[in-house]
Length: 327
Ligand SMILES: [Zn+2]
Image (cartoon, rainbow, N blue to C red; front, side, top):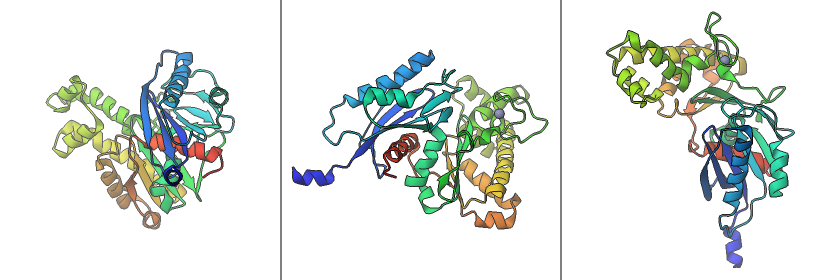
């Protein structure tokens, strides 16, 4: 039995809450995930959403586990989080309409230290401690999926801003005459270059391109940003119009960010980045348009080395390790 002790590693409990699912898992300090399970989320109300998180953790902890019990719980959540108090203040894709001190509630229920943060900040910490961000002290984590968000690491520290909102890159303005955005602003980046924005533009322009191959895919509800890029590569005019606009606009916004922050690396995540096409286009765009001395200090724009379906869980685990002073 003594020899086993050397192979058993302490774990924390990571909880990655998304708009449609909750992923719960044990995570070792080196990012190994020995056990994880996915749970549904009942998003019909604020109460049911919070109850879904508690039920998922309760169920997971009941799975027979002969190793060390978890030392702490870390939770990554969408929306506005006060990481200091552990309060989930609001979310747009889940019905959190008034603040809940989720950290206090989970701590009371599970008798463990609990830390909360925004999911993109958590993913950025995963990159900093377990991913490509280990090699640098100044990087930007750029997530382009349904929406667009960034995590900024400067001098080895996550930049949070005055109320933990730093990095809402998708709502920076790229067109002073642009259309209204869901956020209340005008001319935002997200409706043009996010996965959701790309699909919305295809839908809006379909009547002008009746022969586009994207029409049939859209009707079958099979269309993804990746297929829009694929169609563009194969000469589909609608695909070319929408994807080139997304590249130009995201590239334009990214150059501003690079000139302001002078990062040495941009680490990309999210479904729109996953096939590498957008990354190659952005690299070309930035090389052609950025100030040379800023571009030359940029070592690369790279795809995350972490597994896409684990980065949120790993980020949540870093929150937990930090809460007990182990990172
Ligand atoms: Zn906006």
